[in-house]
Image (cartoon, rainbow, N blue to C red):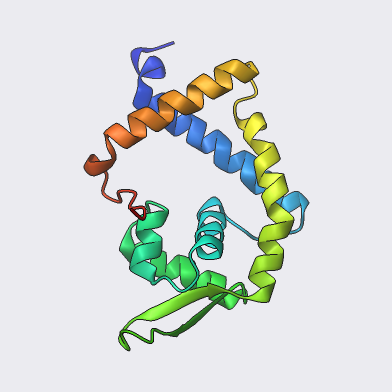
Length: 153
C-alpha cells in the first residue's frame, strides 16, 4: 500500500465510487434510470415543493450550473414539472409530478436498504459512528465547498 491509500481524500473518493456503483446496480436491477443526484433532487422536491433550481442546488449541495441538466433530465422523464414562479416570473418553480412521487415511493425503501451495503465492512455501531463523524467533518468544511449545502433555517 502506498501513502495515498490511507489519505482521507482518497478513501472518501473510493467510498463514493463504491456508493455510486451500488446505487446504480440497484437501480438497474429495478429497471430504473435514476442517479444518486436525481434521487436527492426528488427527495428535496417532495419535501420542498415549489422551490427554484438555485434553492434545489443548495439543498443537495450541487453546483448551480449542473443542476439545470439534472432538472432537465428529470423533466424529460416526466418526474418533475417546471412552472412559472408566481412571485418572480423570471424564476421557475419545481414540483414532483405524480410519476415522480410514485418513483420516489418505489425507490426510497431500496435506497434506504442499500446504505448498509455501502458500509458492509462495519458493524452497526461502527456505521453509526462513521455517519456521525462524516457528518461532523462535512458540516465543519461546508463553507470550503464549491457547492455548499444550504438548508432552510
